Amino acid sequence: MSERLYEPTIKNKHKILISEEQIKRRIEELGKQISEEYRDKCPIVIGVLNGAFVFMADLIRELTIDCEVDFVKISSYGGQRVSSGNIRLLKDFDCHVDGRHVLVVEDIADSGRSIKFLEQMFSDSDPKSVKIISLLLKEGGAVVDFKVDYIGFTIPNDFVVGYGLDFDQKYRNLSDIYILE
Ligand code: IMP
Ligand code: MG
Image (cartoon, rainbow, N blue to C red; front, side, top):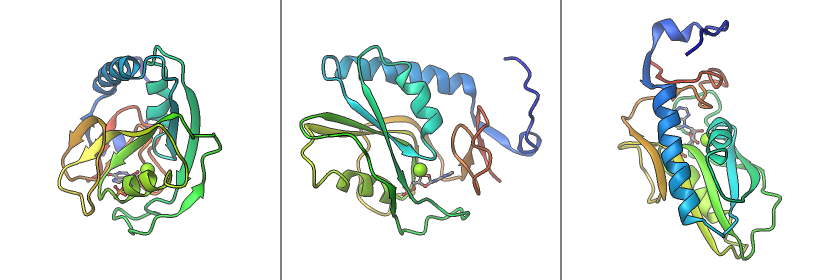
């Protein structure tokens, strides 16, 4: 890897949980699997802002099929490390999902409330299928019943940042995923 000029202070203080290389390899695998399963289906890939934008950008470039892209935005932790449990829709999807295959892209599933909320978001529409992919799944965090169809990595119950994931809106630009001590 080439040296980068910007070295956020976190790099010296915190531990890498998943490296850029590991993420890249896993996304190649997921891209292959999804391309096979969605062959000729032209899915609408809907990224969940803000956290999933980095993962989404890398994932769609591993797809060898046609797809469309859209985004939703839901409220997140608001500077806390613990979810408020109160989820709000800040930006709805713009695409027409009726009769279409939808793949929702999340950064991380913790309590499962966001995933649950995202599933219910399509209850007024008539998509052919709705599946969820999450780069990370936190072990032991679930407080509601939810299902993720594709998982990048299962991780311990720590707070992580980097590769799109933030703490108080920072560290999204790190290429590796770190545990925030
Ligand atoms: P859930 O609704 O509790 O499953 O939380 C999901 C959302 O909370 C994710 O989409 C993230 O935006 C945020 N989140 C959960 N855990 C972490 C973490 O360890 N680091 C950064 N963001 C997190
Ligand atoms: Mg999120």
